[in-house]
Structure formats: C-alpha cells, structure tokens
Image (tube, rainbow, N blue to C red; front, side, top):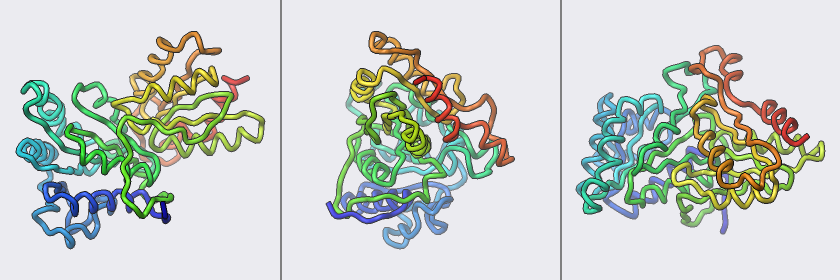
Length: 326
C-alpha cells in the first residue's frame, strides 16, 4: 500500500478521525482535548471538524471521564476517553476496574462496554513523580480489560482503529516519548488485530521481548550488537492482554535465550508475567534462565540524569544481552 511518513501523534489522530467519520456513535471525551487539542496535541483540529458534541471537553475529574464513557458505551456509543497522564488512571480506576471490566461478565454477556481509554505514560520528559508513571501492568490483572501499548506510528494507528471497533473496554497506552517519532503509515485504511505480536527484527542468538518505548531502544541495541556478531530477535508484543504467546514460543524455540525489557519497576512488572510463562511452558527449550530487565524501585525523579538512570537504556540492554549470550 502507498504510505507516507507521519508522527505517532498524527497516526493516532488519523485513527480517531477515520473512525469518527465512519461511525457517528464514536466520540471523544477528556480534559482539554477540544479547544486546546490535548495535552500532547493528539486531538488537535478534531473539535473544529466534528464539533463540541463529539469532542467533549470535560471537567478535571478522571472518575467522571471514565464513568461517562462507561455509561455511554452501555447505551450503544463508542467513546474514546483521554486521561491526561497515566498516573491519573488511578483516580478513575473504580469505574474502569469495578464497572467497565465486570459488566459483561455480570450480565451474562447481554451488556457490552465498547470503550477505549487512551493515556500518555512513561518517563523521559522531566514531568516528575506524579506525571511519569507506567502502570499498565496493573490493568493486565483485571479480567475483562484489554491492554495495548504500540511502539510505532503504524502500530498506533492500526491498533487504535481496532480498539475503537472492539466491543470490550480497552486501555490504550501511549508513551510520551513516542508522540514525535516518525514512521511509515499506509494511506489506505488498515487494522491491526489486537492480541498479535510483531517480530520487529529476526535473529538467531537471543530473543528480546518488549513493548512501547523499549522497542526502539532494543532495536538500537541490536544494531550495536550486530557489529559484535550477536544476532538479536526483537519481539514487540504490542498487546499485553491478550498476549500472543504463540509468537513468543516460536522465537524462544529458535534462539533458546530470552530477555524481557520493560520500563516499570522490575518487581511486579508485566515482564514478570512473560518471564513466568516462558519458564513454565518453554523450560526445555531454554539454555539459560530468563532475564528481566526492568526499572528501578522508585517514582521517576525530576532530575533528568536520575530519571534516565532508573529506566533501561540502550547501554543497559546491550550489557544484559552480552552477559546472557556469552
């Protein structure tokens, strides 16, 4: 398909615009998403195109934003809610965890909640402890919720379009450092299935599994290591729940070594779930223990040097891969 280079933020905007044009039931709501265009500019121009009834500037209340989305979804709308920073998902989590995620189960499938909650996550912008969280693993623990975290503009657009079409509540994780990154995105319409990982680079010596901002870092590390004769396979899971274990298994059976890289603190992060699954299901294929490379045990600090230090960087990934391969 013909494509052009656009940013991650532009890809997300295109996804929402296309789905809003296609279906009048799709609408947006969130703090400062209308006139201001969103804290990171993702929704710029959409209020002018679709009007304030479909691009709704809400009060500063995350529980109201998510609660409003739940109610609208229950009566047949397809809301796309934006929470300004992922840390604030905690404030609206009662509506998301105790209502949206459970309704379909508790009503025997007779009710559905087709809603998306988008939110920027992660460190690297100097936004300090209250605005730099990576809490995606919290929501993977909740039956009924889907969680995706794309790493490229191509994946961001295709996955968001699929998320809006999905009949289940879905948490869409957007890393702040990815918004300005660029990539090829087809001009024609396309969808990426939720629950399908992507092999970003094939290799034979070691499998490195990650998602979101860690994928460009792992790819950079793999280029460095290629010069030293180490061939890295890079798996971008893209979707945390549901998780594509088939693609992971295929890679591990080939390379026999695994590192899982993620930004949140190492303890209890989603990488621990991947590591556990590989250890239980693929033990006979492993030539070494699975390694988890996660963040440090502290909130992201304001100081840029300290902030960088607590999250895996390219040099950390290179170091860990060398240790495991050699």
